Image (cartoon, rainbow, N blue to C red; front, side, top):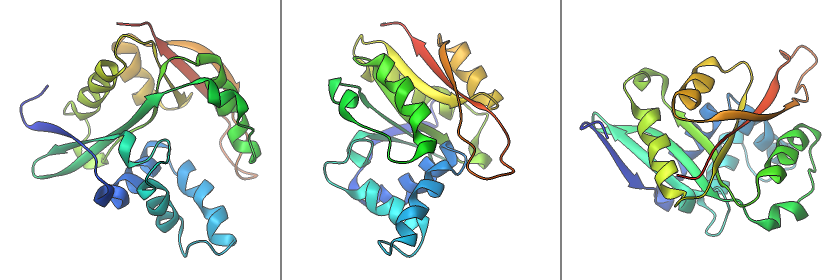
Length: 193
């Protein structure tokens, strides 16, 4: 690990930062999903809903599954990962845009799944993403590791490729808006360590 980067387990009080970084990692897809709860009156803003989801005690992909990277005295990034168990097979997509990603996840049951890996833009390029990724590989405890990224996210594809991941499958993304840029979701996997 780079000496100026410190990793720590997230706590519930980190929920706001986790929501922001999960949204950054998803290039706004997370806040788009959370907006549905704003429309139904559950929260006032998408990030407020994200904060609530991240603070849930037993939520898969919430604060208990998150590792925070700190650098230069501030929170710099996050990785959120967990073991992908058989229960994923029982989940049905309720929003069409999530169906392709869910279908890809169902093909890698038994792997360690990295659901989010994000770093604030002003702190990119100094090894934080690589450090978080290496930590997730260690947490996999000799399981294969999998993740999904967008086909047009060159920086992520490069990072994962340099760290032993290869493309396992693709699924066309459902456009969120009429003028959305077309891309595919790319399932990347890395064999057990």
